[in-house]
Image: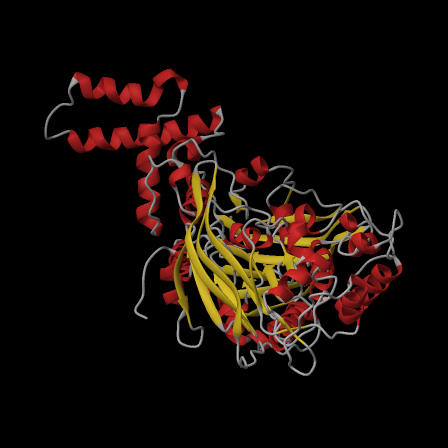
Length: 600
């Protein structure tokens, strides 16, 4: 295969046109970056080449010959393979077993011919030295024809050959369940090369890798290019595009925008092509002003199904500061946030909230009458003139009036253990732990409910009797749609019908609108366009400046280092370090992400 040409490719899903009359040229022996924001059509277009989608119109040409690619099997016939974000491997199988899995009789015949050639070469070398023994001949025939199945020993040798040729480090006999994410990705690539692909498509290949693993991957891809292979990388990371690619092709909202040689462009130009206008690519990071302790996580251990998901975690989170959490996916980030929010119960350790109530009046939303009397007896309150309050002998009616007139004021911040609190109890305490979870429709929003109803999920308990007050949620939904640019037919549209990016905008907007004291966010810009992502970064800074304690779990190290005031790194449930983003490199963070240590 020397080239692929796409002409006038279109593809629709219902009323959404994912690909709109796209024409594109892919050349032999190049690394092509396919660039575009989420929802631009990058993956859909590559799925057409890979035989996963069939275009509604348009044609595919390979070496100027019109072809029909109706399935991944057809794609392999034309030596095209695609590595998806979610790996298609069997955990209980070894590497070599996964590689040969799915081969058909025609594949066995082809590989047996290869094996016969290998055996003949062996015997040819042996001639002139000595005659092969009967055992050697019998073993060779057995390897070739054993039970009509493909020989794993020969497959193992071919895997080792591929690894040596391109720079992979894979143990053919290692089980997938024992592999790291990068090893699984490498296995998928070797699996494709084993089948003889000349064009390899990688969908967001660096999203789950450390900086060190990205360097290794890029070296492998360059080795493949040197061998005449063609590589297409689907991505939205501009720094990686500039580092690895020869050419860049840009899509926007399902349309082809243009292509450019990487050596003749820059991130600003590529961003403008992606978005349609100039975008300021600098992340704002305001200097923290007198950060104060808001949350303590002391020796927290969480066990799920007999496995330590969190292992003796210690962290401090300050108001007026953004604490970033970096780590390979599945290292315990999600579970840590869920423990703080009351959604998971730690086996041991303490989670302590420092409620910023110093010199602020008590409210009945925050405390009931009994609790106020108990705290007053402990000397926790003063009046507006600074005098200690004694509620002894006062009638309940008098105390209620004092609370309503804001005459009962806290001396200092409250210290509250959260371990035994349910999420509802935490909210009833007045602790606004706003939570933007990783699972948007599973934990954040209800797909079958409309926009207004999803806004009401945070306030319906404030209604009286059986009636749910909907005017405020409706105004909030209108505000978020306008402020965040949520694309929706109307407020009555079920959230599940919105795109992933719009669902995310809605969720982030709802959580920030509650003016939280602690804001925990897990991948809050995943699925968002560049403009909205930078808008979210600014909103997080605004929350920080409003004395909120912000926890930001992210996957892009460049963003984490640019946005956060402190960065905690987690590996297999353990905190391997808390570093200053001003003074640490991506490579050093990468070492911590794999369980290593660095000099402080």
